[in-house]
Amino acid sequence: MEKLIKLLCAIADEHARRGNETASIKVINTIYEAWDLDIRTHSEEVVENKFLKVS
Image (cartoon, rainbow, N blue to C red; front, side, top):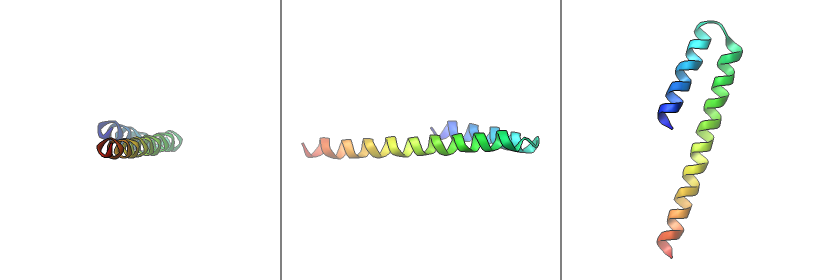
């Protein structure tokens, strides 16, 4: 996931450098969505692992 976010940041930077603010903002929103999904997925895995250890 970290590599994907770095790639998306580079794409957003390139769009901004070329003056395409709309595309840059769309990519930034995609970064936030990917980051949020990764956090929620990781949190669910942590909770599942804690329950598995207790069982």
